[in-house]
Length: 263
Image 1: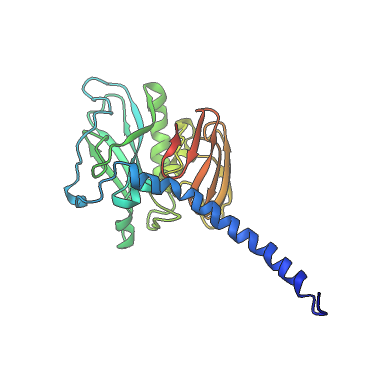
Image 2: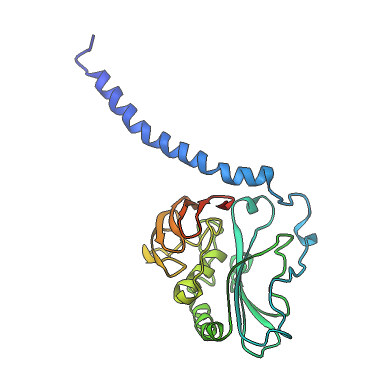
């Protein structure tokens, strides 16, 4: 028997509103299965101190002694310890035609946290070093005249990066924000960053729509915490609290947190 207070309808409305938070938490738990799976079954080194981890060359960069033309490469490697189950650290390497060494660009967070410039520019023989034990993956590569034409644009974009003195591991700006920023300014890179590049969707406090990092589509993002990317290279990717998931028809793969791409 229903009383005059109408309590059953109120309980029904309360249950309806409770459904959405529960669905959100359920989706978040489902997305977390990716990083948990990497922790459980991946090859992350959780024991070796970071300063003892390997920084050896992986021999993925052309030797300047034999490759006299220009080279542009973008690398990404899993970050240290348990955080590597979630994300990668990327860097850009360029070599002009005839140059004997590479120039690399990347962001190091502790420099900004100490009040310095987070951008690190280095002249190196081997830009393909392991990132503290993690083998890097080549995310983009161009050679010859095409690469030479990009280098001035890349250098200008690096110099214009707006968050050199600011760093947040999550949701950005961080090292992935930096590489994504450069890629948007130089769409010829055709850089398709994986979902594990957490921070790539951070567009700043006042920008909510911009090109996808690959330059082949567009993205909508709210402070890097929520958004969607639709592009021919990335496919369709939804970002929820930095965890990206979707489908890439171009590569015929799923984009999932933790693992990046499957298969």
